[in-house]
Image 1 (cartoon, rainbow, N blue to C red):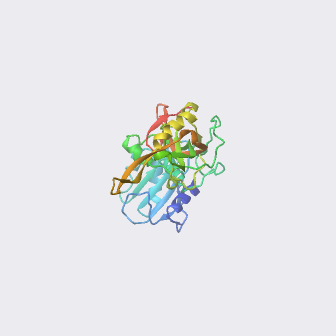
Image 2: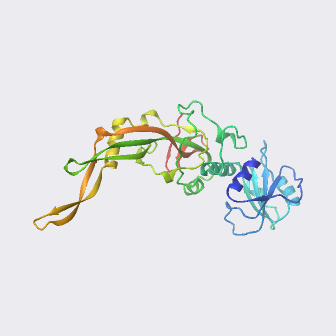
Length: 315
């Protein structure tokens, strides 16, 4: 976990300088001093001491925080705790301290966000990443699919959770399967003129939509996370796919024409329509980042990172 934190901060151009002495504070390890932290909204530019609290059976207690505050140097601190804690444990700490403390849920979410941004390159052999993020569901039909093209997420998970009043919900980053279709075919225009065109389209079975593929949407350093496929019936067969593509491929094009005896030029918009029988289609799997939302009542949902909608989690 300590190396994971260092890697994330390094990817955000934040350097952790070593502390001048080894602080012997039970349960707390000082990872270093940061001049700035991009994930903080605080405008204070004073150095921040970064602390890590390792996992344990019992929650972090008020007595442990009080003992830490006696020996902790400086005034500004960021505590990353793998142990649960109550917010009131900081009530009796001196006012000279500025403490930003993250519990295991927020810490895991932060790491998951770094993975989906491509800040961390994750493999199942890298055990510094929490096990719930790395786990592979062997029951999934498409679980062997790895290192596929992934699209960038369009929503910020923390903003979405805050807007939905779900900030306490535990989240696990995953990838959900989609298809990238490479298509070629003939367009038929005015006077039966024809042209050949090529397209790339995304089939998203979760939202039941087809939309153009844009190379700028590719997520660099796509993480190797658990991959989940939709129900088999959500994929479109060729007939349904062609029917869905037709209104997307048809287009109107400006055509010049000569009218009347004096040959006046005019510009008209003429339809060019796809010949569905000419279409040649090839597909490959791709991914979209997503999150599993674990609710306190045991319910689970999948949050789609491109449209911000949730879908049933079924395995």
